Image (cartoon, rainbow, N blue to C red; front, side, top):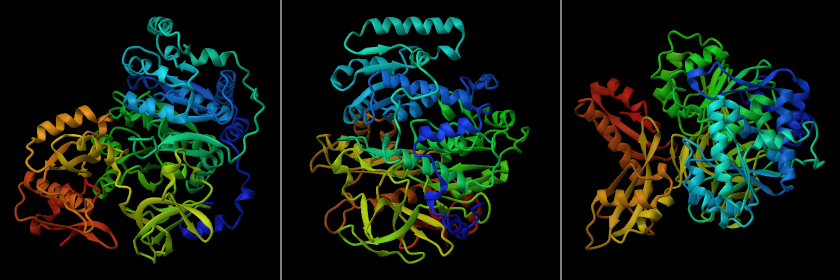
Length: 633
């Protein structure tokens, strides 16, 4: 049944979840779909946006067969349940074979290929990865040469499996890539390198798991790196049951829908949204997934030609982050038939209200804003496709997953549920919740005991209204979200703190019309020390391994704002950033007499109170590109 309001959620939940007969594992969920829709197209991949009509296609039967082959190939490499297959790959069909075949053989760990090598090595070591699946050396791929020299430090690593691009390029280029890979393999004798995953797969049966494994819903399926990447890696352990449930629950909220919808995947497959919302979820519904270029939305000409792709493939649904929607608005959609689009999902970062409204007005597509986190599989709440969609809200909770705003005491223990419209910590509990972090110390403060049940403390602040909709008001975790990418401010602060002239550092997110937020750093120098902003920026660039985390700007203050107990008070810096952004926009537009007061509202979080007089309408259009809350005086 369609989910239009909170009452519909209660109707769905009147049937016990156990009676829904969900698959116990991702492998079984995919097997059931292959059995129900064997000849339907499940996956279409194109390498180049300039030739997007040229696709490589898999039916459901063929996709499941390749997933089974991959599982058996990993089994023959010695992987047993509980051992880790890590992948450092762009968006390729083989990435999906690795994910779902790997989960059938052991535990799959996704690693962002844009990370610096020291971070990749730390993650592989912490997870004790037995197999790494990656691209071989070749034009445009500089990761392997930088990674190769560090592999001998990974004592658990037994096999490297390369994914060749040969099936997707012409014969001449394929032969060149094969020659480069074979030469590179000959240079490494200390680790077993397999030059092509598909070659391993072709030697395997495609109709049964050689391990004979019967996978239970509580078995660990995947590891995901989440939060920061400094110190010991923070790795979340998720289960088969959590992933299957989340895909099913999300599909339930997307009703009514026809079987065989066309879903475009442009978010990276090392991210939970790419894997579940535009992967496992549509494949449990008999849909066709369009996998667009190895770089997804970042691929050359993908944004430029996106509306042509929607028209050509008759795309019904896609998911993106605010920066992608902003980029799409720069493309002319007038000459394209977009009538196939039912809706689009926005997550990972708050959607600016003006961008939200402008996109819907010009494109005519209903945007659904949602909320989720890796620790909750992917999605925890979403605005309904039908019924009352509320701009600025993160929507209604998923069926069978409880979600509350709660008040905690000074020790972080549950005190009471927050009242309606009262801000509290968002807590979630249900079948989608992860097992915990791999490193035991990272689990401190993660769980809240409520009535004898273990709830996840999301670290986000929010409130619930009388109709059951949730509204975020802040992030206790202090993560900086740049274009949907999480940046831990600690890695910025620790790097700059090592400078001999620096006394204190605080990194915060500065509102950005394109990326949502960009990192900036405030620095207090040691008494008697002299150092320029330029020197600090150069130092940050050399010592911060994650390029996206390098501060966009550094400001020197005589003294950083502190709490009464001496801790740095970051909300004051965030308020300063918001005020500066507004005044800069007003100045650039030639608007005089604008006054701004940014304050911490007990119900709404940080709010910018603006008095612009007769200039309000013009300034409102400019400020609407940002995600902070505004109160017009």
